Amino acid sequence: YLIITRSEVMISITGLEFAYTQTPRAIKSTIMSFWLLTIFVGNLSTAFITEINKFQGASFFLFFAGLMFLVSLIFVFTASRFKLNDFIEKSLDLDKDRMEPAPIAG
Image (cartoon, rainbow, N blue to C red; front, side, top):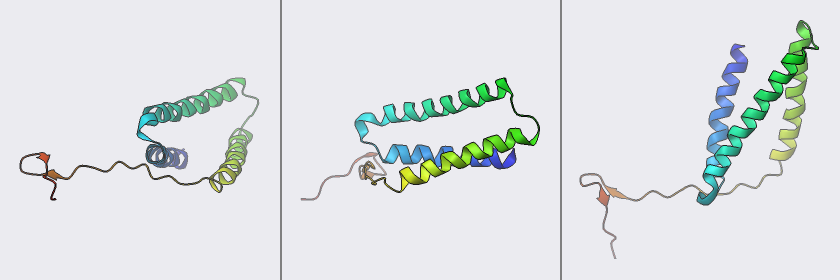
């Protein structure tokens, strides 16, 4: 459980940052909502599998390990074909004393 919890935290942080930096400003909130939707679908499917409880003992955890392996293969296939975008916002150069935009030299 400790390993799974740590991995979920690491995936959440890096996944949110990746989703935020790879989308244009106009749809950043939409992408964040899709991120939360995928987490919901994952939790819902886990709850459904746990509820039907066809697995006993170690086979319960082995099923989820196999499922994670299958999804990892899909991830590697998809990630290897992804083209990176650069949508990181450029911050304004602020005058730290007055907290106003610095004058543009020209």
